Image 1 (spheres, rainbow, N blue to C red):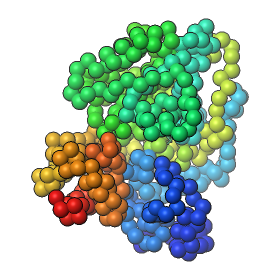
Image 2 (image 1 turned 60 degrees about the horizontal axis):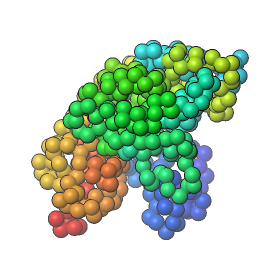
Image 3 (image 1 turned 90 degrees about the horizontal axis):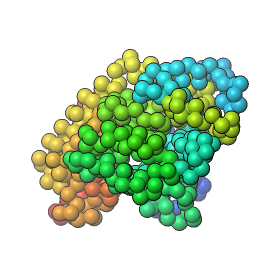
Image 4 (image 1 turned 30 degrees about the vertical axis):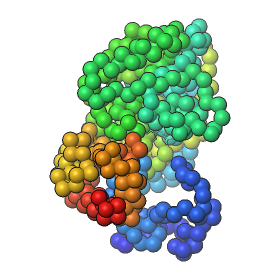
Length: 447
Ligand code: PMP
């Protein structure tokens, strides 16, 4: 298959498929054993993945939007290996210990994060970063004589992780169902309408409803993925910042997915020259080669956390692992060397253009909605006209044609979040498979 054999695997392909069916519980899935199994991957290069049976797949979503530099980068694998040889593990618990990679990375992060953010708390993934951000916002108030100022406002059609804090923060009824009581002290406002003016006033209304004396923070993705990858109106984020300042409320930007180049800026919030008080980072910070998250805060927030003399009793064992920090440093080296953020803009523009062209011959696609913000690319399906079944079936055809894409808004938006470094030829290959999948669905449904 040309991309190297899997290492450490002793079982045959059919056995591995069997082990998966017998023992592996998949996330975001109905766990009925009889449902059709998906691919089991063993190697990757660029945007191409090879499964255990030797089939090649095109990854149009960079794993979970984290494999931002593509698969098979030896440089990243090598830096992880050499770091592990030097120091297998290092903690940041307690004031008096850390390791050299965490120090170096923090200095680098202070340079690239929005102005004012220069204090960093390490974790392992997006959910724990969101959890950390929520705890910081509450702790800063509770320890400074404001025990009631703990409410956090988020938005509907948002995703912020699976921990109880993250799920409570997430604006999605499916995430709230069947898991018992959520955390209290959360509420959700609407996303801004496309092209609207003054949509940030929804935040002010909610602050006044809850009472500013009770609200600790507003937490949101600068560009929401579940809402369909729409860039918000230009006035939205500057006004959100202004409203947060007016009511002494912390602004938390969840850049777990948008951050580290995805939107054609290092951080999506940079697009509006807005600086949050707290910033969550994960996914692409290691290009997906190692788990890592970072929560960045301003000096003002750090000072509030320590003012009372209380300890911030928080942290996860593997947070800021030496190999993860080393891989993050190497990721930033590659991003600089290859102008990856610039590539994301150029590639995203090309991708949206090609989707627009495809819409000329595929009327199910709404040409006017072909859009990109960096390498956050999407187009809408006209399901109101063609029926919801088209949306379900076309995604089955994507899988049959071995192209991995994302679905948002009940299949009304097809999203593409490939490696930021994807070349035009590979964009064409993805668009071709999308076209074939639409043709097959039209034939199947006779439309
Ligand atoms: N916040 C956002 C904006 C995310 O996109 C995600 C993951 N998709 C998370 C938080 C949670 O991250 P993780 O899956 O690493 O826990």
